[in-house]
Length: 262
Picture 1: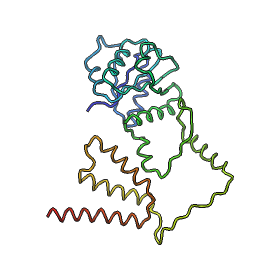
Picture 2 (picture 1 turned 120 degrees about the horizontal axis):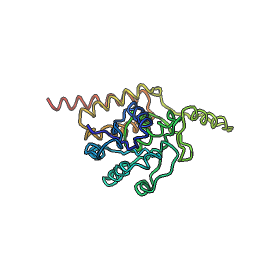
Picture 3 (picture 1 turned 45 degrees about the vertical axis):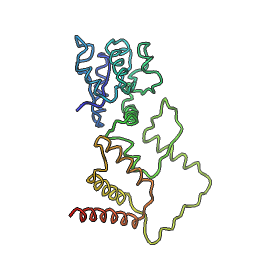
Picture 4 (picture 1 turned 90 degrees about the vertical axis):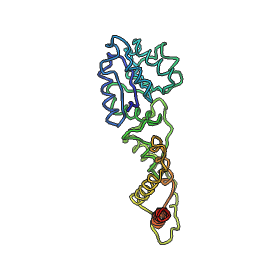
């Protein structure tokens, strides 16, 4: 199986890159790097070329060292020619070298500076998520289960907020609200609102049956299709009676199919 991400870096940055690789792999991202360091190779090996051809994204670790590396420039050129998605990750404050400006024109950068790795890795993972790489901390799967999403205007160059900052910002905005807003009421008959666990069980029921029916096809698109499917449920406000009815609908459809096959 080909690795999803290829990391191009200067050999002098190997220690920093190993830290990034470890964090990415812990998040479930498959990563290919030249463990020996690209400057240590006598020639640009076919293995490196094959890894670039087969990856989905090339992470370009930008630093003073990589800016001076001819092999990094060659890897970037090969990825660009092969129309690979490129994610520039600055591992130190520096300027984009002239040899890389053409391929990186208009591409948003991500910072992974020394001393701020714990927070910076979140920005790298979010960038990978937006580019279609799933992680154990994939925000898209969490969003699919959310009933509401809060967005705030931030500086796009520093768009990462940690959990404490999010809590502080939300609490501050609540505190600012001086106007009394009447509670929203719904007439839901004799049933109560379904709990999160009940909704999750319903989604799982439908996913399992639809998987058996071959709905999530082709296999490589199944994770994305399931996320879209979950988004559908998160937009619904279901009562327990609704959940029971939908379970019954699916069970009856399965029974009908099994009966028709006999």
